Image 1 (cartoon, rainbow, N blue to C red):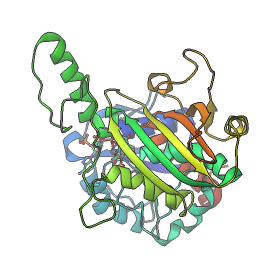
Image 2 (tube, protein in one colour):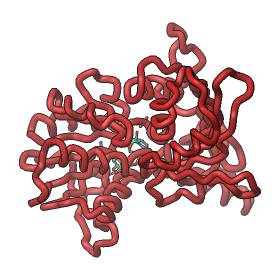
Image 3 (cartoon, rainbow, N blue to C red):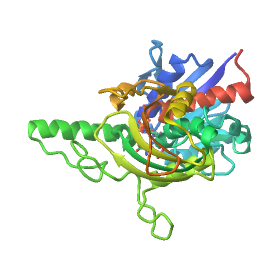
Image 4 (cartoon, protein in one colour):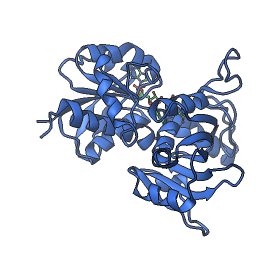
Length: 347
Ligand SMILES: NC(=O)C1=CN([C@@H]2O[C@H](COP(=O)(O)OP(=O)(O)OC[C@H]3O[C@@H](n4cnc5c(N)ncnc54)[C@H](OP(=O)(O)O)[C@@H]3O)[C@@H](O)[C@H]2O)C=CC1
Ligand SMILES: N[C@@H](CC(=O)OP(=O)(O)O)C(=O)O
């Protein structure tokens, strides 16, 4: 006996990866439904490489009653309307948007970091998946925090255009092509040209009436979500930057600890930590770049080194597939955790 699973936003970047990962991991399924907006109703999409095809259903007419789990990857607007409907119909929602993440009655889960927090899910029958940049960072921070207590994190991100959905990828492609063939292509999804450029702006700016005047919401999410998932006492300041990479988010992370921790100790902890692949060689190419993490499950850590400007400091480089650990993989891992700890349907 398995689960009846709905993927909402199944035609998008994240939704398609959800289908791939459910298939790859042989998630115990009794049935699977692909749901999206009326724009793609009736389209045929692959269920991973199983050879099975799914006909996309219109969310406006979809009945969630009788389905066990809905993986939502359709953004905050659709989540606001349909996630509570699905939850009320008895279908547990795992939502990828930012809408419910900071709701005290909604667990925000990264299975390698705070699996026990899922036990509160029944209050709203909704579980939130974190922001892509937060997810990979907390997986890397967790073993170091357990060993030496993190006081403060300064992170700069290098985020791929797939974080802005299909339209973001199309814009990078069209602008790059246009530059080579002499066509002009305007910035639409991004505020400035993204091809051969970097843009220090992801999501909207936070209002001036807060302590975070001048920050963007993406930067605030990295701080607030890290506090909810890992520890409310960790201070986090972020600068989030969009770069002309199709898939894979990178982060340079400076970490200040309460207790001393050496580079060798940190490397040993990261080598054993769930979800982490340490690749750290003091030689040319002895680190992982975003292109190398595409399609992978792991969060890669490289360039672990001492920060001599603070008492107990380390710096590291962290790279992961934002559509996988940053979204679809984490959501499927949450579904697996939910099954193991609560639903217990699969043999
Ligand atoms: N990309 C990333 O790195 C991350 C994304 N997320 C979250 O995942 C979500 C989706 O992102 P992504 O896949 O990149 O976006 P895409 O733009 O690639 O896909 C959006 C999906 O949502 C569907 N959709 C849009 N409007 C509606 C609607 N009114 N009703 C039902 N379905 C709708 C689209 O369907 P249709 O084809 O019919 O238009 C499509 O399937 C967002 O909430 C994002 O915040 C979270 C973490 C990381
Ligand atoms: N903002 C992320 C992706 C994303 O959708 O994040 P969120 O779910 O927090 O809005 C990026 O652009 O790379």
